[in-house]
Image 1 (tube, one colour):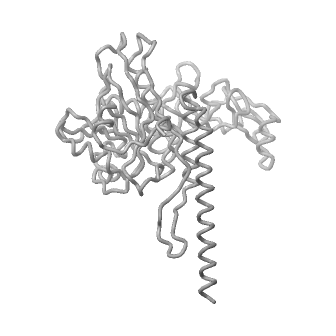
Image 2 (cartoon, helix red, strand yellow; image 1 turned 135 degrees about the vertical axis):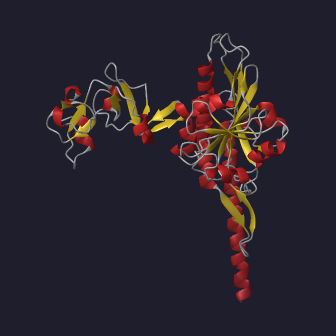
Image 3 (cartoon, helix red, strand yellow; image 1 turned 120 degrees about the vertical axis):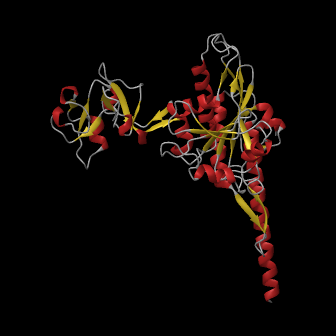
Length: 397
């Protein structure tokens, strides 16, 4: 009698298992059918948004398939990654594109690649064969020669310095109640607006401000404190002194009174490098080469591989730290002696270099990593080196 009941139970479990697989499969086919309309037609921003959405959906839909009786893992299933590689032609149409403009374009590509794959908040993005050595090429960056950059090179040290000194995003500490910023307050007079870090002559107040009333009904912060300067209105400080030693970063996109410079708290300032390393999850940046005109580079994403990683331990443990800061980035060069070297002009940042013959080290930085990484390498390096298993572009499916 128990045997019959067990058989019925087993049949029911198997039936439910098969139904679940069929539903998941149908979902895959539906998504792929819809996506066909985007292949080759969608603009870069659209394809980036689709990729990010599919990364999040894959994380939520991932299911391990187990034997309904013994519980042994039989496989796994999840919605597909709907990502495609974008070709970027830097300096195209700009005959006088400067080195700084080129570095900005590359930095933007790195930040967008990081954003597409979840900003480091999803540990195993690809979910294929338990942390296989997978990576995805977000962008093929073709760097054309320009009048201002005909035959030169952006060294790894220059690129790292730019990444960690150039702002990508700054968090505003405002309520947006007035003049492109402003802070809600209980103060009754402009001089009492202590939320704005400035002398009283700059301060103004908008009483019974509609935005403040709706935002803070319980705290009764009904008045909006503001100035004529966007730096102060967004929680920054205007100063004629250098405040970097006090934990502030210079930010020139917000305005201050003449002869003064805008500074924001370092905690609210994210350079391109900071964005990848600490805005979401903890990521790292690796450059394998100097950047030269006439070359094509791959901006790639790799999630943790789950393999032993000696260089990961060195970087995470603060090996080679300058000025007490955590190591900010690694740069693996193919032309310099092995060892850590200071990045000229970038206090607190070091680069790691290796000899051209040391391809074992180059292989290891692709195959073993305990954190997500954004790579910049020559496209030929990642294609021919067998350093990682490149996830297919949706156009190849």
